[in-house]
Image 1: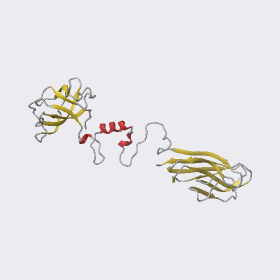
Image 2 (image 1 turned 90 degrees about the horizontal axis):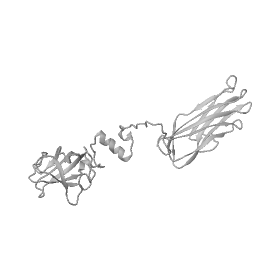
Image 3 (image 1 turned 135 degrees about the vertical axis):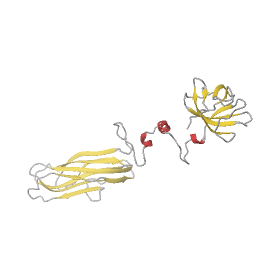
Image 4 (image 1 turned 135 degrees about the horizontal axis):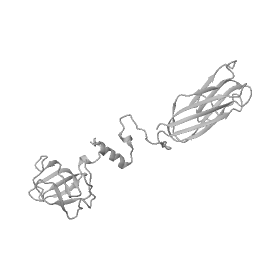
Length: 277
């Protein structure tokens, strides 16, 4: 694959089979230097005689110190081969773009590793473009995914002191933008000494102060409050649950506990909401 130059056409110092040494720009065209030629970079060229009876298309690197474009590889020529044409007269040489140098959406391209890296750099794509099928490389930095990007994390992390036994409440809430998310919730229930608890609920969904099974996630545990089980703390943890959000929606992390004894029974809970797409 070769680089491009805009409207670059020149006359070399000689014909024959020697490399093309720049002599002068053709009227109406730019010289390699004016077109921004880069030392050592590969360019495709077409050399042709005035009557077009002799022509050659090839590739070679340009040397800015000597003004020489090498005839390293001849791709095709006027005699149907891949050898250098022995030009009888001095031809004109144009820097050209061939099909193989252009990105196609209709067929596969053959790019070297260096060319793939350059293409990613040109369009601002990271190494994810080099990943194998089914693989997404991670970042090498510590910057977290921003809002709207895969991997974005939204959290609810707070506590709730219950207003009474079997009275549900909100640990917290958050606004969730459209997308697909994986959600996990966890809650640690406990109270002061002398409190006997036997029923615990933790839920995540779009209904405020509700631990109903209609919520997106609903956890419920019940254990006898008889001694020695009554005076205890308990942790409820969910598996990861995928939710799809069609429009910006408020989600609530809700809890409820059944208990007897002194007040102050509470829950410390978290919802971990990670964008999957």
